[in-house]
Image (tube, rainbow, N blue to C red; front, side):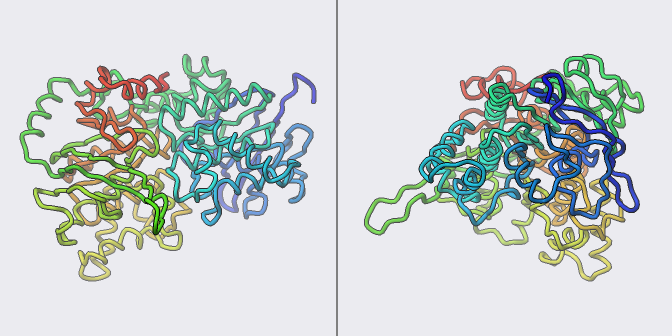
Length: 555
């Protein structure tokens, strides 16, 4: 391969079903030691492009055509299944969006990473183990020895993603395909991982095809950016040029759909707004915000948590002292009716542990939770259903063999909120309409929906029990910017329409600041700072909060 020739060349890549064209005549190149980012909405063809390059759709019912698909010396369109194994092992590394789906749940993390080394590198077990431990250290995993022995379910979402990144880099690939690799990571770890990927890229002259919905990350990370929409390449430019002077209206829409730190708009602009040349967007003044807060905090709280503590046993011995992990330590806070309370912190700080405790999925070790002035643990199920949880991963939260209609109907039947099938179907249709989905989604299955559509379904299911409090655990983390803007607007509309309160949990401080009235910051299970959203963002008091804000990638 010549010094100035591309590492990856794609020409005329087209992917079709019997009825639709999913990817249309796509052509681009990735040069050695270059980072190319792909951005676009759900369903634009970003992941499909990555899967086709990695040979992961060759056995499907999709028809793949191309004039050229070349990676280094390998003609990707002519590889046998056995050749693909070698290419994917040594030449091509992959990091997927959902680490829970990518890791074997019945196998410890260390041996999973070792498998690739054993197949492609010579050595003994001791050498393999020390290489894996070193890789875990490089991706900032705490206590690599423990992670080596741990099963995937024992790790937080961010820790699982770091294991996947370590696995992808372990054999020094020429090209790394990273499909939303930092989606599950908080900003400080995200910054470390991106710095690590850049360092690996420079050291090994590795190229990266980087798929992300976070334009702030792309702006700081990529050399060139490809913008895709409905299976077509809209524009491709050097990163600085694209963000300074985007040519397409669609690209401008993607850039402006992100919450801006210095202005709080009543509604986030969507791609459709920018494409239709809408220029004025109403902002919320600080005076109206203060007036709203005065009314909010004059009420008694809808939720009050006092001295909540949750411990998980690490060791179990009959005659020795058992060790335990304190996931949440003496946490106390109040949430008021009509309020959005933001909760931020790094992976493993206890955010998701708290959310599970609030809906009785994980009983606290000690402490008390009060809902509407009454202790939650003694309340009847007919009252507890007023608190609902929206999970981080909408695909994992939906049963793959149940239709969307059945998934939304399930809580209606469990809580006996409908009398017959007709009433149930009508209520499901109303819920679909509330979250901006059409009636024909009723008979579809989760795999037939995009990420944004699946998240709307999960929100609709949570609304089925007519809750007063929604716990949103990373509810928009997996969504690209334009879809994220639509879902955030939807959440604000539903809050007004149905008089809801939100506990909004996220690692994305920009999104939390936009949504929240107040923000709580957690570190290692401890509440380190709490305050009005703008005040905390612009005038943080604690060093940890300052570090979180400093690590935010801003265009």
